[in-house]
Length: 386
Image 1 (spheres, rainbow, N blue to C red):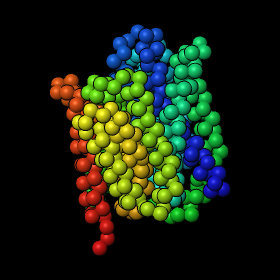
Image 2 (cartoon, one colour):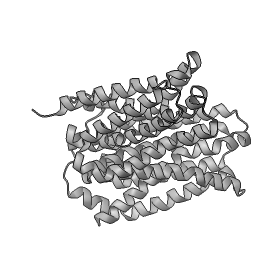
Image 3 (cartoon, rainbow, N blue to C red):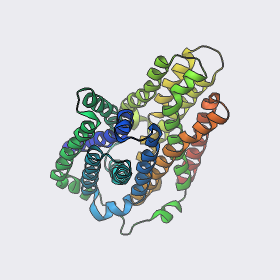
Image 4 (cartoon, helix red, strand yellow):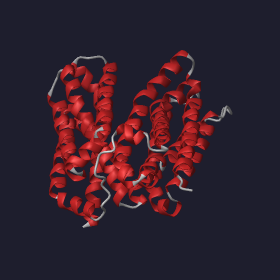
């Protein structure tokens, strides 16, 4: 039964990744049909991200009321309805309204599933599950591309992914007894909700939130701006730059697959330190002013590989560091902190690059990498029992 439940959770993580990259793949065609500027995708993205942050902060309350299985099923269904909405409306104002449930569904799933896996399953599954998120995020642009090229349009792309989400909703509802049985094996639910303020007051929590913020700022900035930096600052042709920028995410996905085999041997904290050291090495390769174009290209892949274990290992270590009874509330706030870094820091770099120079790219990443390492080490010191 545990194996069957794990398979469903893996499917849920693929489902979590599917909607995340749809907007970017659809928008070049979508904005023309709707009749709005290309730049307006940023507003939709911000609404989705803000809604995701809100639902992440509510995850502790919702999980206690509904349970992880029901919350996951409902959230996937809400996301499916939002995708159908995107497929059927032709008004940007309505898209902004529908973007709210689009983001709310994603945040609830993310926080609830991450906590459930951290509590009930070994560290290797956390790494592999986040690897499967990458599978979902990688597959959906291909679905959108196929629908557009075959005449079904971007509407068909959104509708196709919504059908996948509805099928998964049915599967999760059918599997609800498995979720309840697994939860009953571990009596780790506290009597009362901890709340946001209560969670932040726990020793070490503010620093782990900073760690998460810095990591996601680093990852999202590298993913969005790497190709532009390689072209404008290093003189690398656009095709090569785009290919290696995509390899940054391939490094993350592949790294998480590999980490699944070594996570229990090394433990979460050693994996975070190892990943941080590799990421810092990669950033150094990007920054070296040697005029050898292979160095920044290799550095980007190495940075992605180093990033791989950090996110899942921080989440998996949360019940151990802060207590199982507090983990749902803290992971919810961690997700909110992560989405905040992902949403706001890439635009900050864009402004700095415009006002100063794109050459600051590796140093911008370095600042967040160093802050991430320091805040994690402070967290370890504050949560290690004497």
